Image (cartoon, rainbow, N blue to C red; front, side):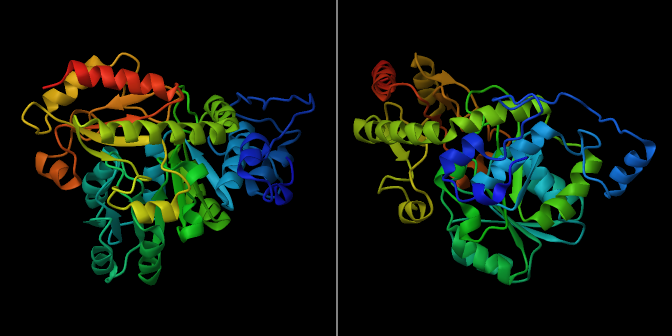
Length: 404
């Protein structure tokens, strides 16, 4: 394995391509896929020493694997973290980051604007284990202050949030959380490690659904949790070892290949999204258009303080003939698109669009969706790598077809 000390001085694009590369005796240029569940030992004594931790080496791929280790170390370099652990999916990462830390009687404070499955863990699972969960409006620092006053074990936030692109002041919340004795977990999937660095803003733990931009081509599932060496080894290590949400070697290899183009893709997708968002905002047939780098975004100043660009995600409302947002208007628009695919995935090289009310957040009550700003006409657009003029022409044609 290359010494990562000097590699920390590399710029992000170089880290994403070459960081933590490990080559076998064959000297392969592309990372090898170690598709093995177990490992052999020269002697019984060597096996004993490795299980005791007296000898370095791999034991079982549920614990660690050479290809997975490359992905973890490269992600740690890219994020500026001391260490990382990879998981089978983004939701496995959220689940593990929380459940490895809390037990009955502990408190978790979280922002309200979260992915639907994250809300399920907070609202349905954790209370069943005796964990006290408080949900706050992530943009209201006074709500954070009040909720954290009694103390807490963990704080969870997602910023920008899915699907409304709500932006939270990470540094301000981290200050309050640390005063309360809580570790802060930030789901940074929308911003990616290219555009936002939560650890630099005070976060303790960062996690990703690697299924999204890190793979970037809609091929496979994965997740990753990043933090200090102590947290990854002492807290995450036993949890991962004994519960088994490990990333497969093949998927780790796919993620390594995705990282090689991550910097290029994210910058180009952000450039495309800014153009598409401006077209939608100026069109006149849409309602509110939410894009972090646009001045009319409710948390624009905070977003631009934390993010280097607006990212590739856009949320906007479709209106019916009466000027009201509606599911029918949204469905008509989605069905009229030719180039953009209807899919609940995001971060893909292909542009994808979904209707959160009936897909990613359909489990929530109408009242809960209203609080989150998920109206019947809201759609979430993940802008890809197509020519932005083609995307704009496709959307213009769809809007024309569905004109009320």
